[in-house]
Length: 622
Ligand code: M6R
Image (cartoon, rainbow, N blue to C red; front, side):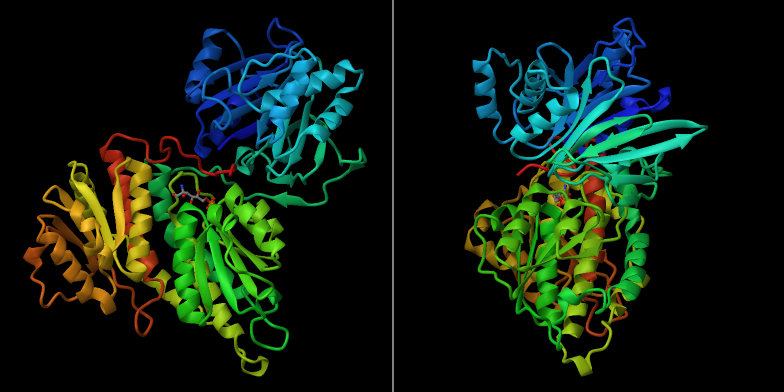
């Protein structure tokens, strides 16, 4: 979603355009910058350049106009349209009438309509459909009333309702003003060769290669930064220092030998799972997670709800199954955007688990607020350690997937599923009376790491070519297979824009069989022995209607009464060993070929798998 960058320094190659490139992965549909470094004849005037579409359009426009991207001072924005079309006019930065203020903004100013009509009565005209323009006009209004820039910023913030992270230029000053409420904003300093630099960004990735230490700005803060540092003020106008200095691993990772991040990230899965397992073995202990253990034994809650969006919701579905089976805990998964408004019955006896890669997903954050309002215990299972979700939950269980750049989530999903399994094992162990408690058993995680297999990708390429042939796609399965099918279908939709309807196998005959004909492929997800025969019978029902059946099963599944000629294709996945009765994390192995198929489909169609149309990596609006 939208990205903010601000830069004050002296390194032309690290200018604001360079920083915006680091934010591209978040998804955007227009971009713009404001600079006022006086390198051009414009002197102290703020120079704005904006373009719809990709950054290359902005770059070309700058080149054509002979403008710089602000070697010393600038702010920039990648916009994912919420208020108004994704065109040049609505692109950020937005400016005051007198051109002295330029604002880039993430979040939503909820009272913008009311503010606009108030300002219109005072003679201000609006050129865009955005909520952000009201902030630029308010800054001008308070300045015109005699307020110094910082005071004008404070008065403006006092008027804004909703969420905002803003970076602001004021003509004639070599400073960046900023303000933050509910949308993430970070500030970092760096010094190289005796030269100082200050960075502002909505995403740490934007400066992590240059500045390893940074501050996560708290809500309600505003202030100003120059190349020597920054001043921070709270709502009462008091000056303060943000207490927590954080350090970032270098996350602007090299893509190495892979043509796309998505492929790289699929192959990152195994090292990430290993890191996560090692982490859990040492840190996921009763001492570190008192929230999950009753003081006198037992767990201190009687049921769990698991909440997430998109892929994280699919991980929640798997997690709910694991918590039920492994920990014998009454558990259910919910889509975050529904949970908030149609909340199930939860109270202080409920553990509410929020799953998210980014930790900034607005729907998930809102759902957590609702759970807190109802006194549930909250646990964040999140990949981004310093995110809002991780910070605001009662307890935080880190997902160790590492930075994920491709919009289509791959390794984060697998690591979320593994983390939820670890949670299930933890809760099984915690349920025992104090004297009988022993450490949770994470051996299935080790068995997963030992057995996970990728294959060479050739079969996945073939299936991708098949799917490009124009036939209708239906995915069916039961239990965990159904959940894998849901995630497989989402991946395919995101990366290739093909539709794959997903149904419970047993539901076939209750309606959607009417859609199945010889122009269909029915993919039968059947890796679970317990339901294999029943699911194969459902496959027969589809085959009888002319569909080509693609069977997805394990390399150990025998098909005795089911000759292989019945299948148009069989795709076999490695059956994990090392755990009696089957590894409960087989779902992590099972999704790998489907992530690869989604990737190959995108490549086959000549698309960019890392940046699907219309989508954003981190969805920060509800
Ligand atoms: O950052 P989050 O995990 O909270 O994001 C949730 C969804 O937006 C996300 O999983 C989305 O569905 C992915 N693009 C799926 O690949």
